[in-house]
Length: 585
Image 1 (tube, rainbow, N blue to C red):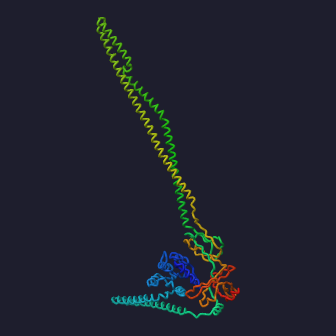
Image 2: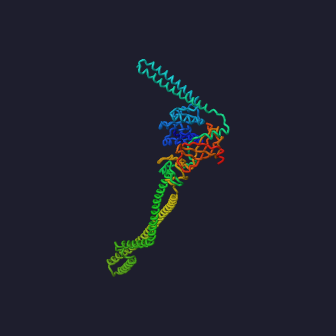
Image 3: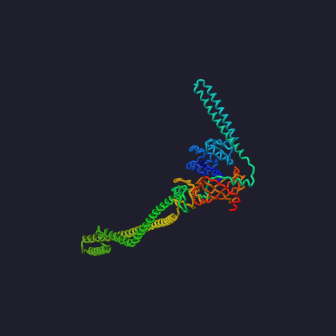
């Protein structure tokens, strides 16, 4: 059995190659890739014998894929299918490690033969490329001759070279001639086989309807059994296979878990949401602390303002009373040092007036000679002293009045200063209170936004991280192209289910016999031989109206596998019943 991986970005080409390979008994398609990266990944997992590779691929070119596969997996053969027939494409592909090169329009039998050649390690080129490859061979031949001449000339210029060294160019030349001869033989053999195939493709004479029916009735066709219906279950998102619950060949029912897919994008979303939730929660706590601090500040400022306002009126009375007491104490203190300050102005005035009256009376008595001059002078001295006390009392009273006025003015200024300081303190506290209230409002608004954001994050529905993929249909696990731990992409097939109750076999029927068959015509399907032989009754369900390159029409025959036996992949023989019998049934 030759295991084959098909790599092409065109769906129609992939379908044609898959159909061609599956129609050959000993060929088996183990994988299909649409791009270069997928091809490399499948090669690593499936380890095919041959890779049918398109050169024009998205993501990674076919030339690069050829180099990578040839380097890492030298035992895997690469057969290039290209739409280009130029020399540079062929030479680049072969230099990269390809074993064969075909054009996409090559006949089916040529592709089949090329696969067989390449699987045996032979180099194969398409028939249309022979003319392109001959100049390359001639160039190789001329270049080899040139190398030989250059080496011989170089050796002849060194006469002192030992004889053992002189023999080396002859040995190298012999090896290169052998390689050239091997290449010419290989190309000639391929050309001969192609010519023989072309001769075999010459049309045969047409048969009558009776001859076709007779041949059909006596001919057994062979093919491989496949399920009539298969279901592919693909991955919806990018992920990693976490657990696989089934194996190839297991029977599954509708809704049965097949495998668990770890959704990478959902996991990343969940991590991001958790981080945002934690950040929002931290921001909420910070803003809440700011709001509480602003609220406490407001309460403290209100208490300070109320305390200042409450103490403002008593402060005014206390200031006035204190100023009065200070004035009185000052006035009394100023009177204590001098004796004259103890007398009021009216008293000193009365003393002065009595002293003046006494002096005047004594003056009259002195003029009358009733008293001596000494008494008069004594009375005059007392008058002058009384006059001096009176003047000093007047001056002291004026000074005291001026001092009291100054004390009152000072007291008023101090009162105004104290009141102004009180009012300024209240105004400053009011400004601080306004700032604290603004901070409180801002914190409240920000807290509301954060709570709204937290609510939205809590409502956000994160896709399931571990998605259980279940069977959408009942059947048998036919293919399981994934393994645990493998990363897959959206759209990749993870499980392929097959229904065993209805099997089919596709067989090629030559164009000379196809008119003897019709839809719904009965057929006998035979499996095995001897006592283990099995027979099933089937009918033709499809006849492809377009022939293949071999001029064969593909006919599908279906039959019911009532016991659900595991017959998929077995070779079976088909014998068609005559149309008259089919019509009678």
